[in-house]
Image (cartoon, rainbow, N blue to C red; front, side, top):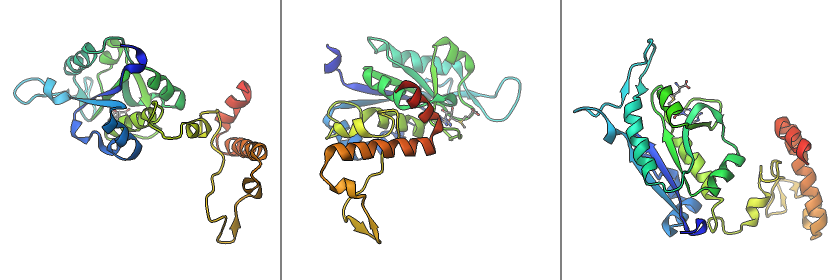
Length: 238
Ligand code: SAM
């Protein structure tokens, strides 16, 4: 099978597989899922639990609040998840301790054949599992969620819209925030006059070169003001 004929697949390890596809069933990602432009497989962590009660967690060694997901249980789930992957694909643990998710990561994941996403719960994973499987940790922001499922859906949504055929007009992907290293320029639609506020004249001019120049300048301005970190990177590379 060639790379292009494979269907990009998200394989998700979670204690709550029933929350998938969740928001991914709506709109673009939902239609694309129905059309088979991408695939979703969930792995129920509970199935790998130990004993009659299928225990998946234990108290933190050394004391402290909460529970930690057991390494042996997680190992069985990850081994199963990776066993049917012919070529290695990214293995990610959604974690507030991870590197920030950005568009570069999303593009890298979209270029692979799929991604296995591990959703933590409670106090998260035993550190030894992360080292043993060389799992990459990624965070969707500097805040703490109750579980990794919402974070996984965020990542999957962002990847799916980059897959061929998902977004109707692929040109809209080129212009949007982060694709050029800048935040997107301001957008307007009809009516051209609303609440006494007029759409910038240049956008009504029909002059594509002037419109492109206005948008570039506006994108640079908004990036400089709102995201000095992105602005510095952009200036260094452009
Ligand atoms: N004890 C962990 C800590 O302080 O870093 C927080 C665990 S959190 C309550 C439970 C799970 O939610 C994590 O294992 C992770 O999978 C997920 N999670 C929480 N915040 C996240 C974030 N900002 N990005 C990605 N996943 C997150």
